Image (tube, rainbow over all chains, first blue to last red; front, side, top):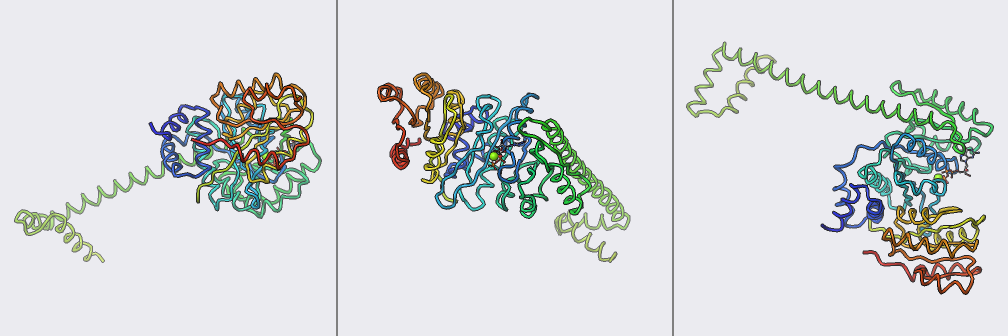
Length: 318
Length: 135
Ligand SMILES: Nc1nc2c(ncn2[C@@H]2O[C@H](COP(=O)(O)OP(=O)(O)OP(=O)(O)O)[C@@H](O)[C@H]2O)c(=O)[nH]1
Ligand SMILES: [Mg+2]
């Protein structure tokens, strides 16, 4: 086995060291990265991926810790990718999200990894996606991605998620900016955190007003929830909504699949009917027999014969 | 996208210290030197520190301690690193550690110990000079 094959095997069996190594290979974007991701890809697609984004200091990491605990109570395993910006000047990064989750670091059903954006143009979105794939392939039921909602590149990162939660806190004054950056459009669920503070209700009303202006699509009505991440208040309700959204996506996918299946069946049925009635007609007109003889005498091959027959038929019609 | 190898370093605070000013200053200096610094926050158990180092796949671990509990905590951390086959990570320490304890701590595999008042550039240079090679 090559080193990469060994790591892939380790990831698939849930080995934590292999998971960590695999993510490093993805971060470093070496010659082996592509091979690793390709080998892991067939084993992905089972995890529900949740994106948590919002202004700096709104309580994302604190909330994620409570979300993990809630899923653990339900016996689900959880992976986290916490993305923080690399300094454009020094190339360094301070990765501090996991400070709020450290009590969970020894839980074998939880895997938390910090990633820096590393300033690779657009690359962090792909690197995040691939790191999520590693956790998915390793068997995590839930994968959570944290990014600070600041700009377009963060919007690209968080799009890896199937359910996107945009979180605000009262009095941060960043609401409008987040909306500008396109966070409002990509959100599936809104959370106003720090509900223990005054002004939380005002923040909720602001968001609701904004949603009304953007006239919501009818299929999924984006809920606006209140949480206090410090105490965990509101977190079970948030999980409920996340699960609801997951089922909504599944129904949509189911609907899409049913549609595709029905379409294929309809096409098959039409083909069959058209062919049968056409052949009948050709036989009645004696054309079928005429061309059959030509084929037998090798004057014509079946494909050209069919083409000629159909051309004549349809030219008459037009 | 070209290859992006970066030094990843864990700054950890074992024990019951009640502040982390020193650890944060060192963390910032390392970040400003271009490293990716993962910080644990206060009051970490040896198990938490070693699990974090594993998940974050760091090259280097810096331990900061003021409480005097290094004599019990450091051996435990080094033992856990051995158990988890993480001995390729370079470990150094800083904080308040009496001169007479230093040889014993180094025997455990701790590469260097920096006392209070060490300049941050000394620490940064030390890390650059002692990054373990990766297979
Ligand atoms: N009062 C109050 N404070 C909170 C609540 N949730 C988080 N905080 C505090 O808000 C601060 C920031 O919390 P984090 O969880 O680090 O926020 P974050 O959004 O992850 O921050 P960045 O990753 O730096 O963008 C911390 O001091 C938390 O203790 C809450 O519900 N109520
Ligand atoms: Mg955070």
